[in-house]
Each structure stands twice: as C-alpha cells, then as structure tokens.
Length: 597
Ligand SMILES: Cc1cc2nc3c(=O)[nH]c(=O)nc-3n(C[C@H](O)[C@H](O)[C@H](O)COP(=O)(O)OP(=O)(O)OC[C@H]3O[C@@H](n4cnc5c(N)ncnc54)[C@H](O)[C@@H]3O)c2cc1C
Image 1 (cartoon, rainbow, N blue to C red):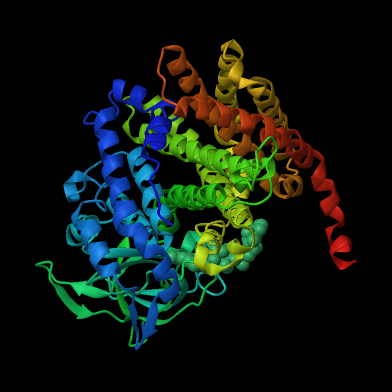
Image 2: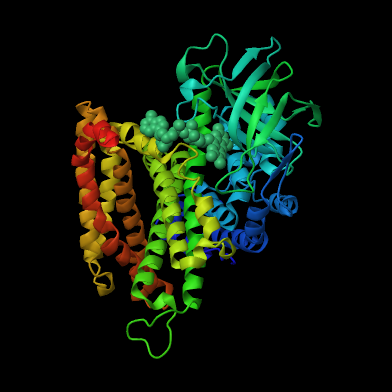
C-alpha cells in the first residue's frame, strides 16, 4: 500500500492552528514565507512517499541482522539513507553554524511525520540524531562541537541516546554505568546499556553515543549523573577517523514491531574503558539529556500521528474496495464497506483523532519556536511554559492515538487485517512502541500533573484553557450551520477540563499526592481531547471563513465535518474522564484487595 504525504493538510494546520502566518508576520521566521514552507513540505512528502515508503514492508520482513558484533540494515537502506542525507533532510532544523538549514521546529515536526509515516524503523535513527545534535549544540564544549557537529548535522554520522540499563528504565536514579577521570580531560566509561536504538549499524562510518554515567564521587540519585560523548571511532584532530573505541554491540533484540530498527545491547569498557568526553558539567548530565529528550518527545508524538495517518490511509483505501452487505439506501448488489455506518464511524474516528493529535503536535512545535525566537523575554518565557505544558500531551496523547488508530485499521480490514500481507498489522505492531519509549505515557501523565500544571502558579494551564474558550466563542459566533453542535460539545469538554484542572491544583496544594498520581493518565487524555478538539475547530473555522469568501475547495467542507464529528462523538467522553479524575482515584485505595481477588 502506497503512502501519500498529506502536504496540503499539514500546511493548512500549520497556518490556521499553529499560527504560521502570525509568526512570519511578527518576524519570528525572517527567512520563511508560506510558499517556501509549502515547497519544503512538497519535496519532503515526495521523498517520503517515493523513496522511503516502498522500503517499509520489505524491511519489516527482513529486519536488521546481527553477526560478529556488526549490524546489517535491510536491503536498500544504505542507498536511501545516503540520498536522504545528501538531499539535506537531516540538516533541516540544525544551526547554520554547523551546516544546518536553521528551519523552525514547526517545519521539522511536519517532516518528521512524513519520514515516520513512510517507514518508522528508518526514521527512528535520524530522530535520535536530531536530539543528539540539539543536546551537543546546547551543552558541548567548542572542541566537541567542532569535531562532531558538522558530520552529525550532514548525516555523515548518526547519534544515539544511552540512558536505559536493566535496573534503570523509568527511574534513572538507578543508573550504574561508571565514568572515571583519566587525568587528561577525558573519561573512561564502563558498563552496559540496553535497548539502544541504532546503537550499531552500517548506515554511517561513525556512531556518536551520548551516554549517561556516574563518577566515583558523584552524589547518589539523578544529581550524580553526567553525560558523555562516546564515539564508536575516536576522531583525530584533523577530523579523520582514528582508533576503534572500547564500545561494542553485544546483541540486538527480537521485537513486536519496528523490526528493521536495530535495538542494541551496548557494552562499554570491556578492554579497560571506552574513551568519553564530558558534555556540560559533571553531575549535571540529566539536565543536558533533557534537552535531547524534550526534542525527542515531540518527535515521538509526531511518530504517533504518522503511524495513525498511514494506517488510516490504508484502511480507507481498503474500505472503498472491499464489498460486503448492502449499505442503507444502496441499490442492488454488495456495497463498499466504506458505505456502512459502522465502518464510517471507524474511519472517521481514525481520521478525526489523527488530525487532533497532529494539531497538538504542531501547536507544541510552534510554542517551542516562539520560546526561542520571540523578540522579548517575557514572550519567550510564556511560550516556554506553554511548550512545557503541551509536550507530555503531544507525546502521550498522539502515541496512544497511534495505537488506537492502527488497531481500528486492522478492524476495518476484517480478517485480512490480521494477515501480515495486507500491512495493516505492521502498523499496529510498529505503533506499539511509541507509548513506551522516550518516557512511558504513564510517566508523561505524571510529568503533566506534577510539574506542568503548577507552572507559574497554574497560570500557564489557565491560559491554555482560556484560549480554548475563545475558540468556543468563535464557534458560537459563526453562523455556519454545518458546525451542528460543535460549539456546545466542545464547550462542555473544555469546562470538564477546567473542573479537572481545579481538582488537581487543589490536590497538589493540599499534597494529596496519591490522588494526583492515580488520576494523571485520564487527565492527560481529557486534556488531549479538549486541546485536540480545539485544534480541529480552529481548522474548521478557517475552512468555514474560506468557504464564505467563495473558496470552493472541497477539503473545507471535510474540515468542518471532521471537527463536528470529533466534538459530537469523541469530545462527549470528556465529562466522563473528568468524573474519573475527580472521583475515580478513591477506588484505588482498595487496589490491593481488588487485584488479589
Ligand atoms: C524498541 C525500544 C527502543 C528503545 N530505545 C531506547 C534508546 O534509544 N535509548 C534508551 O536509553 N532507551 C531506549 N529504550 C528504553 C525505553 O526508553 C524504556 O523501555 C522506557 O523508558 C521504560 O523503561 P522500562 O522498560 O524499564 O519500564 P519500567 O520503568 O519498568 O516501567 C514499567 C511500567 O511501570 C510504569 N512505571 C514505572 N515507574 C513508574 C512510576 N514512578 N509511576 C508510575 N508508573 C511507573 C511505566 O509507566 C510502565 O508502564 C527503548 C526501548 C525499546 C523497547
């Protein structure tokens, strides 16, 4: 099944939901125009659809191979990776000082969706390289930047992120990998890391590992973790590759999905210690790693959108071909299953939730850009807080949607969905990792309620809700009957979010930690529904205005219908979620008894 990059929809969402035009008008993106953004999306979409997407199913079957410490990627990958990097796609968001194109996170996030929809296993390596580039740009010494950044930016080398150890997953307090000062400004790293994405592969000549480790005199817990750059090959002063470092891949995992992305167990220091260079300050490694993780969290959210859109496109195409039964009002013969109301409900749920998640991801990206580029400090601070609030929602809501939509995609196919040849099953298998890595979705929900709601004494979240209300007011003012009950249902969802938010702020002020933790996940879902419904409504309002002004593009009617479907069929669950948040936690007091019974 082919993949068609949704270029027009991404551009529309960037303009009318993520404020692209306002940002250009304010001078945030001085070198950009809407036309240029559209051209970039067009080219990226073409590369994704024509060059990467055909690799997806065959690479899933072949997987990555491990033998004698080497990993071989799937046939065709080296060529496509090189063509992709040579076309400049790896350098898109990076600092021009190191050869990057300096395009905003907003544009990068749209492209990340295309790469991941075309082949998630392929796109995952560059996703982590982008995080490594960002962490090094922000925290590395000038010497490290000079030695590594240009080649990481061009894609000549790739980067990895090494946090996880068998006893240290969500809880990085337990990291045991050791770092010793060598006395010459370098360090010797010893230990092992598990689940390292693209820890070893044959796509590039060098691999630059960013590794969390602990110095001998480090304080316990996360305050004693430092970040090190550990290259596979040590880089000489003239930039050429020198000796092989003391780091090797021990094995790769056999997984449910993303078969073609090598997930490696890495061993550091078998022969006396891998040579590492400190990034940032000693014992401040987690703060540096968070630079990389926040970038990666939004990108993983975009992966959720990507896999959902790919699954939706495939399900829609199948549903239009496959004939069974007779749809209401149809003539003689069997109808395409796409004409049956229950299948339409599934397809609309897939499309509406995917677009809602896309809107949230692009809003988050725009807030990140504003936090860096706004001319005055106060605007940058506010935007930073908004981006911080939205990042866990972008990651967790979108990746949950990725799984749900991919599962519905299998359902639309009926029995054929369960058969590997159709490809629907691959999307479901691939989607399943995204709620787990880059901080599980449970950890994202805890981050949202414990760290993000209290930001600026709750004014950040209150500000976000106030903006949702404004969109509701615009809906009420719109005289377009096609909106149906969109305004009323969306308003109810936003009020449910407001009630649940008040509950949390009170619980946190009263230190009812258990209540807050127990209700975090349903709260994040509720937030995603209200924010996602708002994003759809913003796109629909722009579509309605365009129609009123005489624009006959049929996509506009679709946008209004989609926002309405979401409001009337999905946002209606918001009140129930608010109820769960506010009263459901008490039942957890009896969790042990219930689990024992
Ligand atoms: C394919 C794949 C690729 C990966 N790539 C990388 C990589 O490149 N680099 C890297 O460093 N790691 C990588 N990981 C590791 C990944 O980030 C971890 O698996 C993830 O952080 C979860 O850790 P864990 O597996 O130890 O689960 P655990 O931490 O044991 O969590 C198990 C469950 O308990 C919940 N839980 C844990 N702690 C709490 C808490 N305090 N409160 C509430 N619930 C909690 C979790 O939400 C989860 O549901 C990868 C993993 C996989 C499978």
